[in-house]
Length: 467
Length: 68
Image (cartoon, rainbow over all chains, first blue to last red):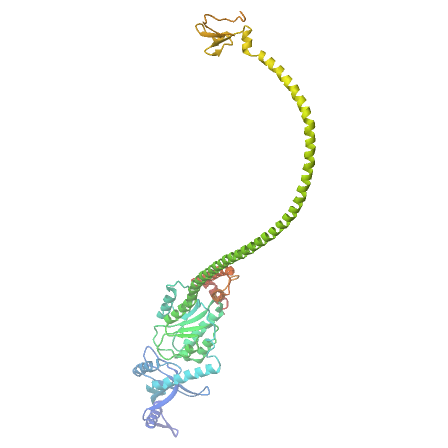
C-alpha cells in the first residue's frame, strides 16, 4: 500500500507499475486487430523469439511507434503460413495486419504481444506495392526501355549475375559450355545475393560494375535456381526494376520460380523461367545465325550450278542457232552464186557469140588475103622450079661421076682382091689368128687362100714376124 | 578488330549476295567472284560461332582501375 510522506501519497515503482498494469488490463481486456508497418522483425535466432518494431508513417514521418513480442511458437506458425501464402517469410519492412494483446510488464514496459498475423493482408499489400512499381515504371516510360535494346545476332559475351555455388548457375554454365554444336560463349560471373530483402541493392551493385566494362559484354543474365519461390518480392521493388529497365545492355532473367512474374522480369529484355531456358535461348540465337549460313551455302551451290547449266544451254542454243544461220546463209550464198554463174554464162555466151561473129568477119577477110598471097607465092614457086631443075640436073650429073670413082676405089679394097694378091687368112676354130700367141702346139688350124683352104697342125710358134 | 569486318556485316553481305544470285541480278562473269566472296563470308561467320575474343584479365583490370 502507498505510504504517506509529508502529506504526499508515495508509491513504490512496483506499486505504480502494477496499477498501470491493472488499468490497462481493465481497459484493454481483449485482443485487437491492428495494422502497421513492421519496420524491423528483430528475430533472435538463439531464443527463437521476435521483437518486431512497429511504426505508422504519415508522409514519411513516424507518427506512432511501439515495441512488440512474437514468441517462438507463434513466430514459427505464422512464418510458415506467410511462406505458404506470400512466398515470403516474415521480414523487415512489410505491412502487416496482426492480432495483439496490450501487454504491460513492470520490468519491460508497454508492448503489443502478437498472437497472429494475417498473411493475406500482407499479400495484398505486396501486390499493391508491385502494382505501384509497375505504374510508376510505365509513367516514367521505362517499361519497354530494356526490351527496345538490340541484342547482337550472336549474344556471345555474357555477364552473369548469380551465385557461384548455386545449382542454377551450374545448370546454365553446363548447357552453354557443353553445347554439342561447338558454339563458344564467354561467361563472367558477377556474384550477388539473388533473393531476400537486400536483393535489389546487391544486384544493382553488380549491374554498376558491369556497366563500367559494358563494352566487353553483349548482355547480362540474372541466373537463380534451386532457391524455391521464396524471397522474391525484392524483384518488385521500384528502384531495382528501374535499374534493370535503364541498363544499357539487354538483361535476360532466369530466376527460376513458378509464381507471378516480378516487375524486374517484366521490364527485362527477356524473361525465361529457368537458367536452362536462358541457356537454350542463347543457343537458339546461335542456331538462328548458323542455319542461314548452311542454307546459304546450299543455295549458293545450287544456284551456281543452275546458272552454269542455264548458260551452257544458252550457249548450246546459240551455237545451234549459229549453225542453222550459217547453213541458211550458205544456201543463200550458193543460190546467189548459182544465179551469178548463170548470168555469167549468159553474158559469156553473148560475149563469145559477139566476138565469134566479129572473128568470122575478120577470118573471112584474112583467108581472102591469104589466098591472094598464096596464089602469088605459087606463081613465084612455079617460076623458081623451072629455073631450079636445070641447076639440079647438072649437079646430079657431076655427083654420078664422083660416085663411080669411089666405087672403083672401094672394089680394090675387097679381101678377095687382097687374097688374090698373095695374102691369106688363118683361123682357129673359125676365129681369125692375129698373133702367134693365139695358138698352142697341136692345135688344128685352117688357112684360107684366094682359091681354097689348107688344114694344118701347129708344131711350134715364136715371135719373129714375117718369117 | 581493326581492318576486320564484323560478323553482322559479313552476315548481311552474304544475305545480299544470295539474294542477288537468287533474283538473277548477277551475270555469269561475276558469278564465280561472288560465290568466292560468299564462301569467304560463310567461313568468317562460322568462325565467329566457335571463337570469342574476350579477355578476362583486361576486364578485371578495367574494373579495378575505376574502383574507389
